[in-house]
Length: 188
View 1: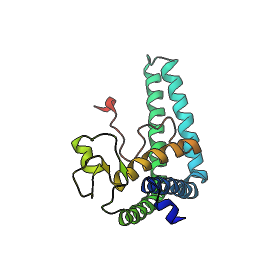
View 2: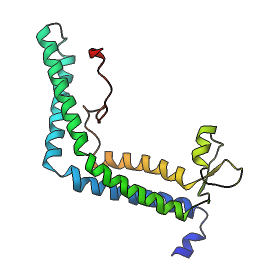
View 3: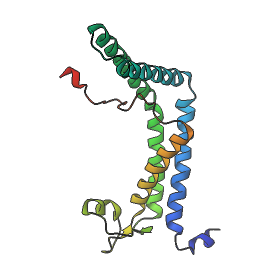
View 4: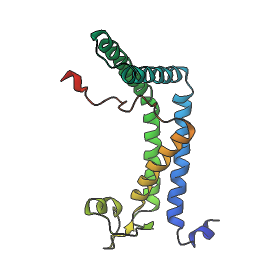
C-alpha cells in the first residue's frame, strides 16, 4: 500500500491532508469527551442561547428609552458575558489536551517531510506568506509549499467546518467569547 501511494504524484499532499482530517476528528472526539457531553457545558450553552435571544428581542422590539429598560439590557449583557467567560474556562482543559495532540502530530509530520515540498502553489505568494509557505525548504522556487503551511491551512479549515457540521460551533450570542473579550465601548 505504501509503495502504491509513494509513486503517486500527489501522495505527500494527500498524506498531509489525510493526517489533518484524522487529527481534526481526534481533536473533536477529545473535546466531546472532555466538554460537549458534560451537563455543565449544556447548561452554559442553553443559558447563552436564551440570554442572546432575550437581548436580541429587547434591543430590536423595544428601543431603550427608559432608564429601567437600559438597566435590564445591561443586566442581560452582563449575564451573557459571564456565561461566555465560564464557557471559555470550561473549554480550557480540553484546549490543553488538543494542543498537546496537535503539537505531537506537527512534530511527527515535520520529521517525515523535513525539507521536502509537499505541494506546488499556482502562484507566487506575497513576501510575508512566502516565509510561511516556503518554511524549511531549500531552493528558490517560491511556488513550492512546505508541509507546515499546508497542514496549517488544512487544520484551520477542516476543524472549523467539522465543528459546524457536528454542532460544536460556539453559541450565536458569544461572538467575543473568550478569556480576553473586546472592551465594552459603554464603559469608556
